[in-house]
Length: 68
Image 1 (cartoon, helix red, strand yellow):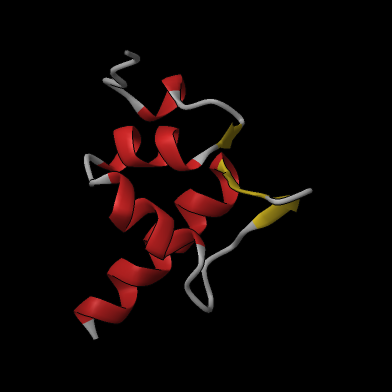
Image 2 (cartoon, rainbow, N blue to C red):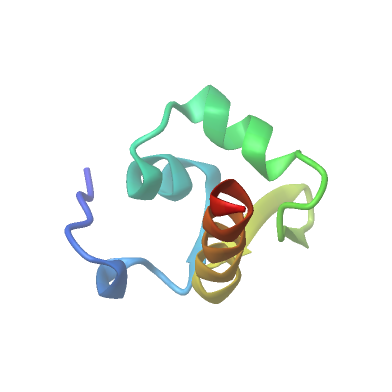
């Protein structure tokens, strides 16, 4: 089991399992996030993934929205 201690350790693209580990959320929450409107998903066949760059950008946008 991979445990990320810094953003630099995130892989370039994160699967549902890696996203759950990176954000310390459940697998079901990770799947919901990957299927939610507005979340930056890359579809590879039937797999949904998110790039590290897009995840960090999305997280920054979410923080900005929460502060306004």
